[in-house]
Amino acid sequence: MKDNINVAIRIRPQTEKEETSFASSSSAFSWAINENTISQVTKTDSKAYLGTSYTFDKVYNQDSKTHEIYYGAVDDIVKSAMNGINATVFAYGQTSSGKTHTMYGKSNEAGIINLAIREVFDHIEKNNRRQFIVRMSYLEIYNEIVSDLLDPNRKNLKISENANASSLTHLILFTSL
Ligand SMILES: Nc1ncnc2c1ncn2[C@@H]1O[C@H](COP(=O)(O)OP(=O)(O)OP(=O)(O)O)[C@@H](O)[C@H]1O
Image 1: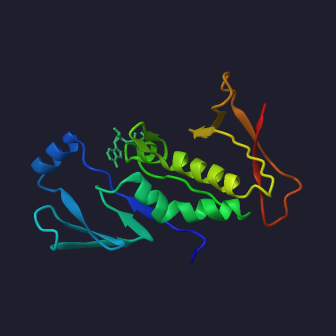
Image 2: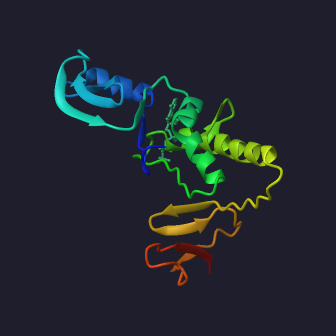
Image 3: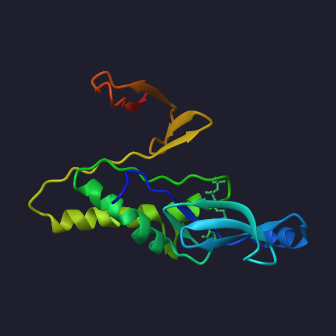
């Protein structure tokens, strides 16, 4: 991978409500995708640029499937993690933008988490000369409260710094109270 940080955008299809309000709004604009750039265009002409464009490492349109995003933007990161390189994949976006749909998936479309876990265990199965220890935690950070979602009592977690971490790496640990 070329850079340490890659940003991919996924555009989700409009809901029926959004379609209706889009059709009736005179100030609404649309987005045109040109390779990795999205540009604001008038809603009637995808070539009539309104001036604002943003470029990302990857842009996936509303017809894209989660497995395309996984193999285009995530699989290399999971593979490097399996070779000892620290890696993070996270979804960021306003409410209802499609984070859960993309990361968690549905019964008919596996999410990024499912596909990543499958890759982790495929890698372990193919490398049976090495010993792997897989640890998992499942945390929620909501309104600055950290909860352990695997704890049936959902205790809030205390955040503390790891005193042994080097001055360059300030590792924040989530610990149970
Ligand atoms: N790519 C997609 N294709 C079809 N439907 C989608 C897509 N992305 C999201 N949706 C639908 O849009 C709605 C909102 O998506 P989702 O719940 O994933 O948003 P979210 O970002 O997790 O929201 P929140 O931050 O409020 O939890 C859901 O009904 C979901 O099924």
